[in-house]
Structure formats: structure tokens, C-alpha cells
Image (tube, rainbow, N blue to C red; front, side):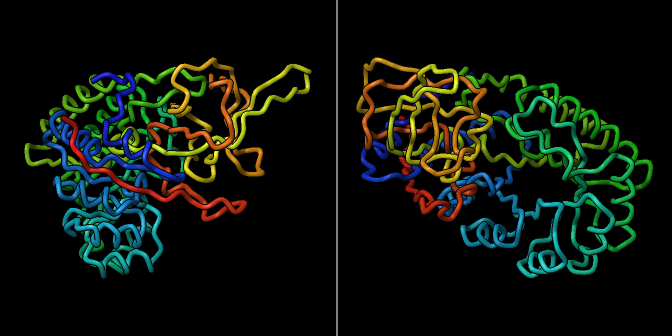
Length: 396
């Protein structure tokens, strides 16, 4: 599988063209295909969709119908997964940061598997979800990922032993280990290192009499249609990543036993390339900078606060359907708000856009299906969050 930007489906293009106002469109057929490809590549892995990447009922229900479960980070996400039809035995509470109240609410909902990374959290789970299963998250470096996710989550191997022994002593079931190599992980080496750490720790735990039943490999699988900060297509080595994960899983079973199960929590990998925003041109303006040189600015009707939160780390592909063969100019891309952060950072590459763009012209922001919904503000500067629609035609 190549990371070369994939052609958007005819159904997605039609929905974008038909949209009379700004919105994000999710292609359920494309999401289904990405899920099925993942299952072919990693057939021994149970998928728990990371709801935070796309908390859309239709997407959750689509994946649940295919057999996926859900990784929820709060009681509200857990409730949404259950309402969308995910069986409770395929739902886990994947956030290591939980209040007593949140743990009790998850327990009331019937969720019995919790992530953890501290003995304090274990004590709270034992009190408010007695008898629950816990899996301990190991810290990783996050190297090679666009978003490393380091610091806040995960513990050292030595602490993991202490956490799981405390869980056993507290009447909980020490059920598993987990890692997260960072979001949009661009290297196979990160997976190799994490799997080696897991193998070492499984051996230590076995000597302590703790036999786990699963390993959670977390999120991190990349989307394939992004551009980097400077406009060059990202090229994650997805085939190599899958091969390293398969080999690592085989090794873990050799270390721990064939009964070991595997779970993953993909989010952006499943949805990013199969969602796109239909937006509008607010203005294409030419202004002189402090050095006196002219510079074009393209202001869009969506930006960092309503759909494109991750524009500080990636460039989204832009398509201008009413300008099929234009003369281009290099421009800074920015959103509509009165906030200087609502733009690509000044050190990023300029984006080539049609020179004759006019206010109101449509623009399609491609591969924007991950985090567009969940990161939107509720009306910053009076700009409404984007509504969404779905299309569910399968590709031929």
C-alpha cells in the first residue's frame, strides 16, 4: 500500500459538489475499505476504534457493524459507543486519567476493562469498579510521530510491574499491557522498539506470576493522504509497519504463550483520508510584509478553530473545483477568525492556489476526516462548528 494520495471516491466528490454550505463529508464506504484492509494486514488484531478521532454516530455504527469495538476516553464517549451499537464487551476505557466519578459511571455502564498507569488510579478502580480488568500503559519516546504523545501518559517498565501487582492484590484482574507510539507515526522502528519493550516486560511479569491475556498496541497507524508542513506528500512506510507489527506479535506469543490476544486503537488511520471539508474562499488578498515584498494570503471559511486544528503540523490538500486549469500564486493559508494562530505557521511552505479566486468560491479540504469534528470550538468569534453528512456508497 502506498502513501501516495488516494483518489477520493466518486460518492465523496459528488457529496462535496452537492453541498450548498460548508460541511464535512464522511465516506463510509472508504472507511469500511480501510478497516477491511487493516484486518487483512493484521488478522489477529481486535480493533477498538479511537472515538476521539471521529465521534460521529454513523462512523461508529459502521465500524461496529464490521466487528470493531470502541476505545473511549470518558463516560460520554463510552455512552456514545454503546448507543451506536458497539457491544459492551468490545468497549474499554482507554484513558489513564480518570476521576473516581468517571470510573464509577463507566462501571455502571457495564464497562469492565480500564487503562491505567499508576497505583493511585488502580486504587480508585478497585474501589469504584471492583473486580474490573486493567491494562497498564507503558511510556514511549514518541520519536518519529507528528504528535509524540509523551509525558502525560504511560509509566516505566518497573512501575508497570508495581501497578499490575497492586491490581492483583486489590482484587482486580491484571489483564494486559499497552503502548502508543505517537499519532501519525512515520517509522517502523518505533513499533519495533515498543514491541521489544513489551516482550521484555512480559517475561518479567511471567516470573512474577502475572499472566496477562492481551497486549494493546494502541494507536499511531498513519493516514496516507497528508502533506507535510512544507507541502510535500508524507510517505509513511505502511507496508513495513504492518510487517514489523506482525513479526513482533509472533515474538510476543513465543515469549508469553499462544493464548495472548492483541488489540489496536486506530483512529486517524481509518477516517482521515475518507473525510473532506467543503468550505469557501473568504478572500485572496495581496499584502506587503515588513520586508516590503508582496505576499498572497488565502483566507478560508474554515481554519484552526472550525475543522483544521492540526494545521500547525500538516498541510491539507486543497482542491478548487471551479478552477480546473488556473494560473497559480504562492499563498499563506489562514482561517476566518480574528486570531493570529488561525493560519499555517510562518515557517511553513506556501501553498500554490489559483490567482483568480473570488470570495465564495468552493474549496475542498481533503484528508481532513480525523479530529475535524472533535477539535472544533463551539463558536469562537461567532464562527459555527461545521455540520457533517455521510455517504455510504461502496467503491466499485
